[in-house]
Length: 79
Image 1 (tube, rainbow, N blue to C red):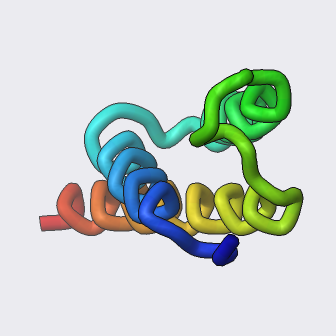
Image 2: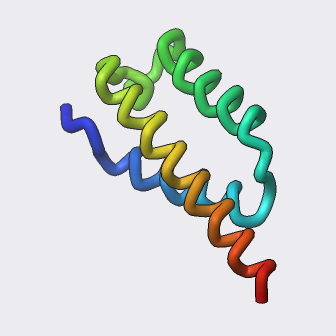
């Protein structure tokens, strides 16, 4: 299994939109992002079966996407 996959693209799109339009609260972002990755450890579905390396990559992708979304939000407010 690759570290970055199609689900990573979905994560990136989701968290960049959340950072841009919904929230800039980093504490809430980390709670939801890490909470979901922990929940996936217990879900009995195929999409949730990943290696620990892939879960870490998901958190990195989530963080980059949320940062980008909040950055775009702040830059659009400067105009």
